[in-house]
Image (cartoon, rainbow, N blue to C red):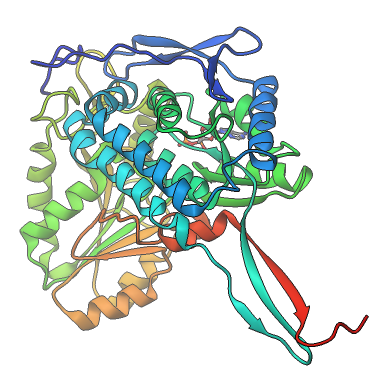
Length: 499
Ligand code: ADP
């Protein structure tokens, strides 16, 4: 266990918390009820700040502002070029505050500060610039219709978008949703996770500074059961984009079905396999598999939580993986030597430990880890189970923690079948030097992203989303822009009107 765990890692000062209120129609305001909730530092469990607790009344106000900005404001009506320029300015402003933003996510979510500064927030900025540059390239098609008619399609913004986001990537997922929606000309109400409201409120203030008109981007902090549910069932919200658990995904679909049939896209959980073949460089495969599960403390929907290793290299892989896990440094996420900070909160911490107990009770072999570490906060050791069987809970359920399940396989066919044997289909990793194996397996795995000899390579241009119960719809790429657009057909007679 490294690091001080008290926020006083050398040379680092936790930023002052400037924004704690709801952001509605361009202003920071208290919740209508006056209520607040506490956001906590997972390194200690201590309260960082009291945050306005938005509920139905506040969601109504935010949606009203977003509706007004959409129906009558300049945002959807201005040229894509003009929108893009404002979004570029937004991106520039974020860049000027990267350190502060990485610190907010560090203290709120226990995320590595250096990684936030170098990768997480820069990727969010790239996401924003990717869609800023697409804002003036949205166009329909011309249609040659049967008989006497011709037509064209218009791509129009879908309207008011509700973005409900989780706590594991508070910055990246914020921009995964907000960037294409804004570029398309939509107005947005964001509901950040109750565990991580801080950076979202900071982004709201930067949006205003960048010149995004009032009402176009609103942020309602608060709980899922209140603020989130109110957004999902709102009659004036046209689309919900959601990242989170399958349980909540179902509720959001049900809320849409029983309200106004708003469109819904869901990016849900995963239980992603990493399949390592005999011809792999074992050291490289060990490093890749370690990062695939322990990065961001396993709190990643695309975590490589099931590792299938072919029998020829299995024993060597196991031996080296134990060493690799032991050298993965757990501690204060502000300490640059640390690889893994604390789990997000007590609930998650206890949930992960419960799954470790299931693993032991179901007969898997605990190779390393398995215990909390440190005397405060929500730290858990990097944990590896071997002899895991597909019918065990640890092989089927998304644990969302630093727990690797190791399994041995003989043939390609067996690997494919077993890799596909969960309800999820978000991502998969393949490690092999054999192009034929890589091609065959990548086509046979039912998942939205396949990484060959790499993992976590995320890019704004690569569509991202799930097969099976990992959800539907894609974030990233030009596909994501389509989610926020309606297609309208306009038809005219070529010569004379029949009427
Ligand atoms: P996780 O398991 O990652 O915490 P959740 O699915 O519980 O994911 O939460 C993801 C987001 O969904 C959070 O912003 C949360 O507040 C919100 N949420 C939770 N329950 C509901 C609900 N019933 N309706 C709408 N949003 C919800």
